[in-house]
Length: 232
Ligand code: HEM
View 1 (spheres, rainbow, N blue to C red):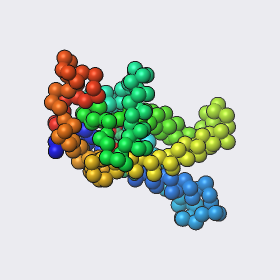
View 2: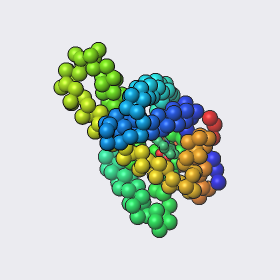
View 3: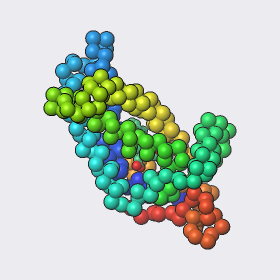
């Protein structure tokens, strides 16, 4: 079993603050939306908590964003530009999750420092982090003080439109909060990926490690494997 360093400290700090914050936002959001029907906490407390945690999450987002913007690890978010390869690899990953995993097939994706996401993770994290999360923060900010941002609210079609967008993205995240942790348990042990998100190190089974793969001129060129990076 080899260990490779794939989750840098800023990403791990961002991730766990974000995870706790998202759960708090979902619970308080449900309370605000279904006031009178659900009684998890006082409406006023739900609003106060939702606002404070929202601002913490906006600040926290910049740990993730600035870290990737100013480090070469941004490569993990580079999209696959060859559509044939992208769709073929995504389909392989989908078949693995839906079928292969249940009969013990190996994961078609091989993790490395600059290639830690499989094609499905890569696309979903790009959409979530660069589109949905920023839109959610922006619409949340507008709804936080409708008077102050009235010009902007009108520009985007009024309170109903801004609120609908905010609630629709909330529904996406409510689904994500179940699917994402489930997929996170599909490592070589159920806790392997989750541990890695705490320690930074992912354990790789030896059979999956072929030194020099991904280097120019080697027989595995074109494979999604890269040389291992063991340094933080
Ligand atoms: C509360 C339960 C959560 C658990 C157990 C969990 C677990 C994990 C794990 C193990 C990873 C490592 C890579 C992977 O396997 O996908 C990861 C990555 C990631 N998670 Fe979560 N997560 C949780 C909540 C969230 C939430 C609420 C978000 C909301 C946006 C989120 C967004 C992400 C993103 C964007 C990455 C990729 C991070 C990067 O390296 O840039 N996670 N998560």
